[in-house]
Image (cartoon, rainbow, N blue to C red; front, side, top):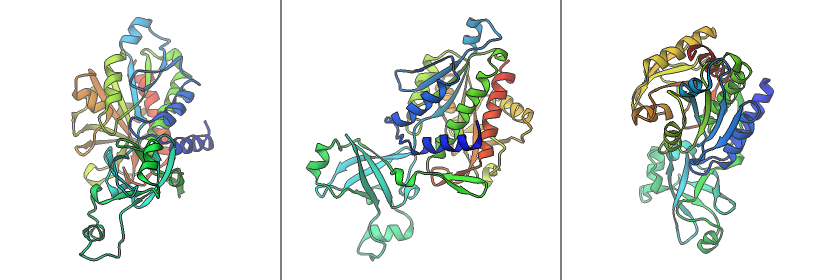
Length: 355
């Protein structure tokens, strides 16, 4: 796949709206791309998309028992309606690890029975201490109960259009297109669209060499990672295999000794505990065989699908590889070479370390 094709697919993924529990637009793209290279593709009962590349160098029963499940999540941070005010404005709360500052005052899409436009509003910055919301805004200490979505529609009209408590609200497509910055690409929701692209590229690389595989490779695009890791938990319990590997964005921070580069971040542990040493070491070796200088990191302020399934006992072993990313959960920036390096490392692990 050429870089132009990669960029076009990444843009398509970024424009696809995917709040947790309503990831249909992202799921359709993942399924289409997996069907180009996998032996079998299906959507499970939890709405995960699964692509299977069968091992060509092992007995089928053994290859299935020792399968590796590679997981990238479909969902993005978003908002959900808590209530509709009498004036038709929406009070919202976070869906996933989001704060008002992650979005700013911006256009939004309200995902009711049809897509409706709205504006996420923090109120005026020209108030005084008489308006607590203005004071909090000027201090940069705004909370979700202080923001609202302007709809310019009546409450009864919104209800008739399918807007209610629980309706998802996402950043509008108006603000979702990727933006080139020197050698980087910036956008909202590179978490987890850049890892999705890397995982799709890895699936294609592995499928082209399936005759060398000694374990089945399962490429799983999971649901609801940002809230509960529900999709990954279901997949880990129902799919065969011994190992789960999450593909993620990796924060750039001095405390983690991580830098923005093509070299993938390999997590040693996160908020939920330590990853399996054998899997982490295998990912480090795979990156080195690709001519990369992987960045091992311990991130107590981070969680992934893999640490969730490892912590719950749903997977025997687990690891996490991440694309170095600036501004995680904000206006994120990655290097295209970082996406490519992640894909190559994953393929090398599946074809080499998993042998």
